[in-house]
Image (spheres, rainbow, N blue to C red):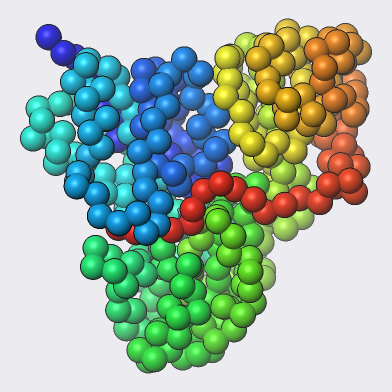
Length: 373
Ligand code: SAH
């Protein structure tokens, strides 16, 4: 008798701190995690190394697939495995989660659906652009630049309605021009939010007329969405992340014990994207800093760490931790006192500033920004 089950889980926009409690619990329990290419590396890093990781997403232009639920997902569930089908954002917002659920019903496999923070909400909060505002907008339209049949017609302008355009960044100039042709004022404020909530996040603002030029070649391989409407002007006032000293930085905190970490909490509050990895861990390709709270944590982290993790600058808390880390081949650049979280945050900031002089942060990611529906 098979007891396989599938959880269709929203991974949120990228910052692992935005996973739901249920999502994290399911990831830690999963035997198989089948993920989309858009799921952030930082979230994949949280999946225990003994779970099977299956990339099942498509890249742009790979065309029509003959299935709605990936055959490997179905096969693993039929073998009796606990499978998490991990999707960027929310599984039911441009995520084809319902199509997969329909297949699971047809196959008689039990499943659950766990919501995630959809990209629009992540971009709104971290990009400091409200989707509604009593002075600007009482409605929101979540739309896509792409549909099953290819390019979509732009939605008509409605006064007092914010538009969030998913999958519209790859052909940004032509998408915005099509909106102007459809009757939108060229002076309508617009923002491009790239890799919202992650250490690679960038937000570029302008108008329907200027945004594409301003974005220039910022359109790397990262996911991005467009927010259009007067609400965009609010960002200039409430950009709460602008002054955070660790904004745009990805920090790995080695953890020896489970439970909430004061160190991780403090680094997040200072704006960093913080990863607390399980042991044994997977590692993201870009790490800006490693923080080592204790000797045992350093031992667990470096036991199977690849070269790029050892080469990442590390801050050790306490002399004994530093000694252990050096013995394990870590690149210790600073030591913080054992009894002060503030001193640790300050050490992290100065270690990253030093590092910045040697190695400017790069916008790089192996993922494709566009997944067509
Ligand atoms: N189910 C997902 C959307 C998948 S469609 C969700 O609910 O968010 C893929 C599109 O989502 C991308 O083309 C991009 O427009 C948007 N997207 C996903 N993650 C994003 C992020 N971190 N920042 C900006 N846009 C993102």
